[in-house]
Each structure stands twice: as structure tokens, then as C-alpha cells.
Amino acid sequence: MMGNKIIFFLSYILLTISNEVHGQQMELIAGHVIFRHGDRTPVTTFPTDPVKPSDWPNGLGQLTSTGIEQHHRLGAYLRNRYGSLLSSNYTASEIAIRSTDLDRTLMSAQSNLIGLYPINATDNKVPIQPIPVHTVSVNLDFLLGVSDCPRYDQIEVEVDQSEEVKKANQYYQDFFKQLEVWTNMTNITVYGAWTVADTIFVEHIYNKAPAWATDGVRKNLSDINDLAFHFLFENNDTKRIRGGPVIQDVWLNMNSSLHEKPFKKVKIYSAHDTTVSAVLSFLGINYPHQPQYASAMFVDLYQQNSSYFVKVEYLNVTDSNTSYAYVLNGCPAEECPFDKFTSIYQPIFPATPDVECVKKEPPMPPSGGNKKLIAILAVVIAVLIIIIFVMFFCLYLRKNDQDPQLLGSARSIQSSA
Image 1 (cartoon, rainbow, N blue to C red):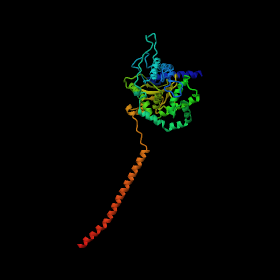
Image 2: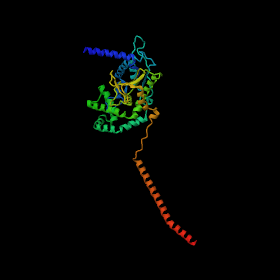
Image 3: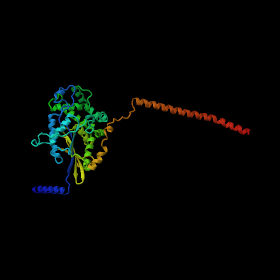
């Protein structure tokens, strides 16, 4: 038994030495993090909700002290993960942070950076390192998937009317009717229940949920929530519009590093559950779930000898330090060759917002006024065919009437000769 352990240990050392000698160790070149904001207050309410917006610290949709702590811990995790890439003090050339222009995502990014760049108070007069977090107006933020986009809005309607969602609505029909009674809302569907689910989920955490929000009710709402995310990002257009821009930005940074152009060793994107879901779905990872608070996905670039590889991992449990690596569709292993990654995803990168967000005109169905128009055209064509037939028939008869007269005239001429 002891001999086996010694043999295994020696084999491990020899393999490690061999890898280092031949330059076979994977070296981390660049890291990219896309995370959801931390714990927050509800973003909306419902008519019968006893909890008012004013009952929440700072109102609706705001990061809580718990959310701040969650991202501080995630930042410490990122320090361990990317410590080989980043200096202990903030260095502008090494890192870039991008956030949506909402309080909860901006504050999550700032809280995260405090954990990522812990400071020794004895070395500095100010016990914090101010680090820039960049953003743009929400209605213009195509990169992080929150901008105004008529095509995306159109797809949401199409998904809500899809057969899959109709079946889900039918399955939960009785539950939705009861939910309407409890909330005083009308016409609740899968996507209407989404907003109720979020509010109830937060209220339950803070012991504010109404009595009817039992374990069974919350389980139904959670399942419906997961389905809503799954259905929405099954659509190829939603994946490309909402998830594609981030991966395109990540790819550009990785590609720059390969071609010795300026690049960031770490890029961080502070966004939302819908952003994380869209990015995962764009990469072909779409299963029914809602990303948790402070969940994060990583798209990292590695080098081995002269070859480069992309590895995607997902940390979908709040405060967990264990990420899950994926084998992307079309890739031979978790470490996907960069060229292969490029050949899979570059062809489906999104175009500019002015192209992607144009609302598509649906094909005109043969119904209503169109049916009437088609019927009228059919009648007109039929009448024209009949008229043409009658004209040719009349000409034919007229020709037959004239031919005997011409023959008789010819015989008279011959006789007189």
C-alpha cells in the first residue's frame, strides 16, 4: 500500500518536471469575468403586497449590505484566481471594469474591487484604492444587454406566444388563477409570474413574504422563473443580441493578446441575471435556471507552448469557491483551442445595434383583409380568363363563316376566264 503511494508520488513529480521542461504547463494569459450583482431589494411590487417600496432601505432595486458583502468575498476569490496576472495595487494597464448604469451593478463592482485590491492601511493614508468603473447610459448599453432594442422586445412577445410557453401556461393555469387572486393581478402567464416570483423571493429572505407564499408556492414560482429564462434564451436572435456582444468583446481582447497588441489582463463586466444567462446561452450552455446573486462566469485564455486555449467556467452558487468547467459544443475538451473557439463563435457575433435591433416585419398571413383581397383577385383573374376564351371563340366562328364565301368567289373568277 505504502509502495503504491510512493510510486504515485514519484510519478507525479516526474510528470510535473517533464511538463515544465518541455514547456507543457498551461499559463494563464487573460481572464474575463461576467457576474450578476449582489443581493438587492425587489425591483417591483404587486397590488396586494403589504410591503411598500418605502419599507426597503433606499427603495426598490438597490444593493443591500448583504449584496455588498457577497461581492467583497467574490473579489477576494478573484484575487486568488487572477493573482498571477494582477499587481497588488491597481494598475490601469492591467484591468478594465465595465458596469451597467444602475446603482446595484455599480455598487457591486465597487464592492468587488475592494475585495480584489485589499489594501494595507499602514502603507496608505487612505484605506481604500479608488478604482474606475466605466459605464454608459442604460438605453445605449448594447454591450451588457440592457439597451433599448425593438427587435429584442419583438422576440419577447414571440416567445410569450410560442407553443412551449403556451404549454407551460396551460400546465400552470390553476396556479396562475390562484396567484391572480392573491396578488390582484390579471392575465398572469409565465412571464407575468416572473415579476411576482422575484418580489416573493426577496421578501422571503427578509421574512416579509405574505402568508400565502408557502414553500410549495415558492417552489412553483422558482420553477416558472427557471423556465422563463430558458425559453427566452433558446432563441438564436436573443442569444446573439443580448449575449453575443460580451463574448465578442472578450474575443477581441484575447485576439489582441495573441497578436502582441495592447490588451487587458483582466476584464470585469458587472451586470444582471439576464446578462449571464444570455452569455451562457450564446456559448451553447442553456439549461433552466436563474443565475444567483454574485454568480460569475469566467472566460479565460491560456497558453501552452505556442498554442492558445479558451476555458469557460461557471460559479453559480453565491459565496462558493468551486467553479464548474464546460466543454463547449464543437470543442474537444474543456480547454478549447483558440482557433476552434474562433471558428465556432466569430461567424455568429452580432452586428452593430442599428442592424441587430431593427424590428422585423412579420410575413403577412392569409387572414382577414388579406383573404378578402386574395378572393377578389381570384374572381377578377377568372373573369378575365372567361372573357379571353369567349373572344377567341367568337373570332374562330367568324373565320369559319367567311371561308366559304372566299371559296365561291374564286370559282366564279375561274369560270369567267
